[in-house]
Image (tube, rainbow, N blue to C red; front, side, top):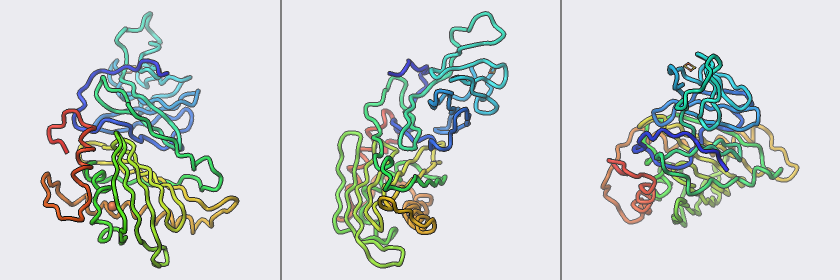
Length: 322
Ligand code: FES
Ligand SMILES: [Fe+2]
């Protein structure tokens, strides 16, 4: 059970509420302190002695120092670099070293964090909203037949709705990904939207091979894809807004080499690169396109309207609702 987190009640209107991937676990060692900027706001992420990752609003309630620049971890708390006030995982001030009492309102906003499958996840949403779904663990990561997680990331200028819409966009597979789709459907189940596709792609020798993919968005920003291509693969595609119209896309992949099989690094890298590039092929389109509220559709376009409606369920009061 989580202790009560401090939340200031700032409006949350422009972004989808839900779980976001805020860091790879491997990028936050014990005692590490990282400044982060997402959703046009500043945060500090740190890992305490107990191994737990904590995400707080960045600026100290005292005189406003950024805890992520020069702040240090002590026990499971973070100490401000300016006058050494100390804050715990709930966001509350736990010590003012030179004062006889802690001012009662001394706290920063704290966010709900979960960590598994190599990912540090945080929930963002309106003040009174709590997560009503979870991000499932990737069980393949505990299986020695699968390679360790390979990661990549890229910053792009677009809106998250473009990334989401891709899952329903049947007609883009051939022009953008050189993949012919034989069977395609999108199923929606509450906060999850899954694209099922069977198609014909190419291996690294450019020979045609079958591609079977089941790609599920768990909420508005984290997608796991089970892909049968040259190897069985699990892909993580996650995006998080840095600010409006600027996104960080994170990509992770594991592949099944087989029990006791070690793939040559160049073979592994070539397949990881191909999977990563598949994801990044869309970027050139996204960065330069405009948004059509009322597109002209043709039959064969895929259920784009349905996925737009699903994505809008993560917004409470977005004036320019997607
Ligand atoms: S600004 Fe953080 S302790 Fe003073
Ligand atoms: Fe795509």
